[in-house]
Length: 194
Image 1: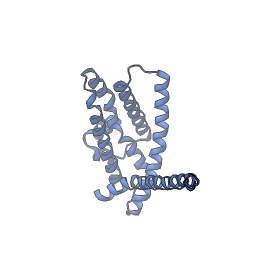
Image 2 (image 1 turned 135 degrees about the vertical axis):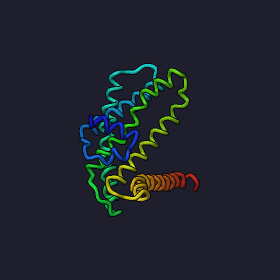
Image 3 (image 1 turned 90 degrees about the vertical axis):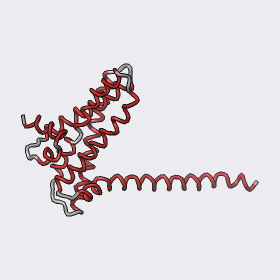
Image 4 (image 1 turned 90 degrees about the horizontal axis):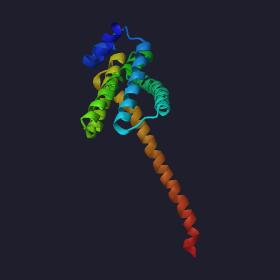
């Protein structure tokens, strides 16, 4: 009954659920797999008319593997940044909380059925966006709870890796644009001399 209580409290009273000591790795992994299945199934229900079972299953397996890789990298970065803010916590605890924070994705599959049957598919992006915001809030609360950070430190910890990634992408685009401009001007320079 503890697992059901934890899942219920993540929806109703998330801070209480994230502080509980009886969270298990198996529960976190199962929530993550079920959440990704519901996310993919919901999108298939809204977008696709027919589903290839092999493609659907391979999509789920690939998504699970990539999501766990992404979570491990993200938790490592958040752990490093949290320690810079003098936070005291364990990356393993944050991993459990982050996996459990994906629980709201479970609502996507049944809501996709409801939206499809009521012909309200135009509301699907809004519903997905609200669920993603819910997950982000849960993940920020996970950082705050596990490391004992205040709200602003937890928000900064959460968004710093994304800001750095955005900065790197912009820098790569600028360098690529300059390289293409220099290369293109070098190619057309002999034509201009004629």
